[in-house]
Image 1: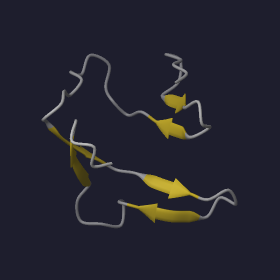
Image 2: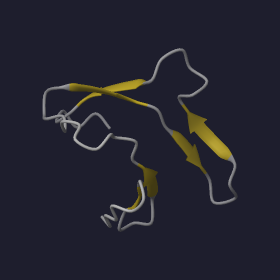
Image 3: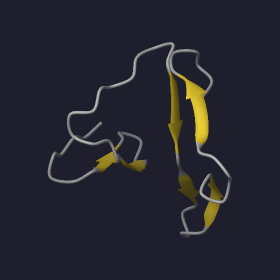
Amino acid sequence: MVFDDATPFRVLENGVVIYDERNVGERVPVDGEEVRFQYATYNENGKRIADTYSDAEPARSELGNSSL
């Protein structure tokens, strides 16, 4: 993963681009904790194919249980 502190965008080795909205100084969650997050995915033509922004709540997942 490429990290650049000048921008919240991250580019994974497989080419996936993510936008990291964590605040500086926020504690990083550990295995066993639940995290909530918003996401949007797009295909190669730029069309949105899935997202959580139209849902009532963000997505949830427990870290470390291989559910994603």
